[in-house]
Length: 570
Image (cartoon, rainbow, N blue to C red; front, side):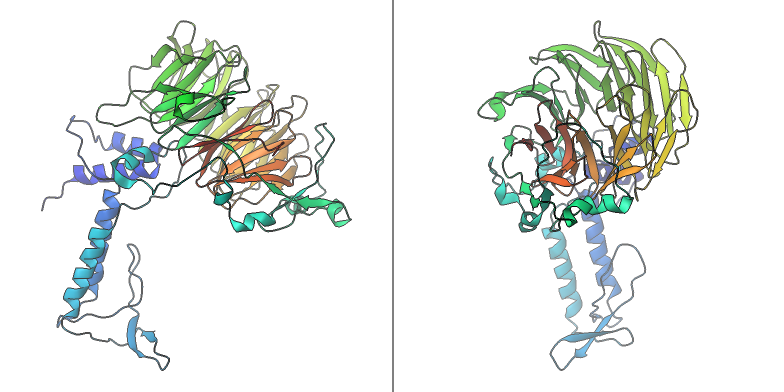
């Protein structure tokens, strides 16, 4: 038996990649110089590291419970990979016929028992399938497409555009308030944060408020049990983006190495009704994940980025216009257009950011100031932009300037997301330190420092009203919070998700907020009173939600499908 470090490192790399820890996988293969010698890439099955650990654990279990005479100790305590094992040995059967545990005495089995245990352990190891790996860390991409292709695919599920068969029974007891005929964007501040929490609907609970308790009509909520389903992607869909110039054109990006442009006005939504935009994989890879899709403000150009560091710029009809890439292959994490649609900004996993001229297809600027991976970028206007990183910094840049215009220091953890206010006055940042900070160019310290989330804050979105300064944040703690920059108050605590909230999107009029989670649900919240308006439940985690200008919501689902909802008319 030969055990070499390169093999162990490769299994660790594959485990990180298959688990969705793309940042960690990239940094590990870089620091371990895994591919420095251009050796042939090993062919291993998905979940190989887990399988090796399972077999090793089973062997240790058998070895630990063998007596010197070859008999076996029948232990009822679980045998885990970490922590000291303390036997809880089975004693004589109790009067009711059930065995009872004891740690002070041993019960010897027949001499043939060790061989039987060994055979059973080996059989369990041989029959075990690749483990299902939990998602975690920064959700850049979850490269389950390759695993699916190689044999770790989930059992096929029958789906239809009517999805009521996927809804849990408990969902029928959700409640929501009566419709509000007032079309104005009226944000009422609750008396206390506790009042705000009471307004949030829990599964199976009631949406209550002071008004409701005083006799106001509260109706049963309406589950969104019908949706237009877009099929065609073969692995998890990570992003969706509506064309700003057309309410029926949607772009999506997935782990199958493709972006797609859909015309959702078509009566059908199968593969033949979409334009497929392909990205070429790296040598030795079956596919490359698409890590971002963004339209320019005019809706004439679509940019799609991939994990191999390549940006492809397409026309609205799906014709390839430019291929933009640096001299090195570095995964792209974030990408944004400026307001005029003439410059494209991209952030990379190695800490660099690049500015591209999309009229000529040339690299305009490259900055290498961040000491950690760039996690998000955003434009203030047509020439000023910001970036954030795992180095805990938020940096503001200007087109034509080789050095930063401003560096904001204050976060104690990775800065996961940034977003400029619609009027450009404020810049909000979300961090692993559990805070949301709001910055201005006139100060080195945040004008507001919002704390309240119990875990990492993953995303921030501004209310689409230039005359208001209200920002929403979503966290791994399963809640969404709505903050008022002027007063410093937490206006809403939107509770109900049972897993991390990964995406947020306001309706164009600012009256509703959609949140998506790995609890397989999308929740539509009323901003006016903080109540749960509608709920959509599907069969897998939600990676992205996006409101269209006229009320529909696109949902990117880990099951490789996209759902189009109409919550205001359902």
